[in-house]
Image (tube, rainbow, N blue to C red; front, side):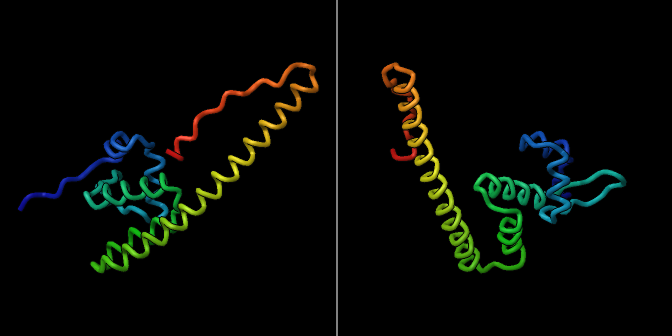
Amino acid sequence: MAREQTFTITELAREFDITPRAIRYYEDQGLISPERAGQNRVYSKRDRTRLKLTLRGRRLGLSLAEIRELIDMYDVGRDQRSQLSKFLTVLTRQRAALERQREDIEAVLAEIGSLETRAHELLGGEARATPRKKNLAKR
């Protein structure tokens, strides 16, 4: 019987461009659970997948608790409907939060533009248009 592929902390850190400390943190949080070979951690394919999902969840802005809940759902059962339903709920909530943040940022940028224009007027110069980046999200 072939032995399962394993990974060292250094290999995973290099592959995912994170520090070993970050991997140990995710381990402390219960997101991954490597085996031990003496003092060394030995990570399985399952640990690698869980780490990959954790990093994806962090990129999406999910909390570690949300990530753990979603990952654990895949470990305990094969009811994909409930897993996907929970995932969609989390994604919908995250999308709404990001949309609110974008609206807040746009409002602050508009206020900054007004203040810049007013400051230029008070300095006696003509109001100069400040170059703005195009909003790529609205494409």
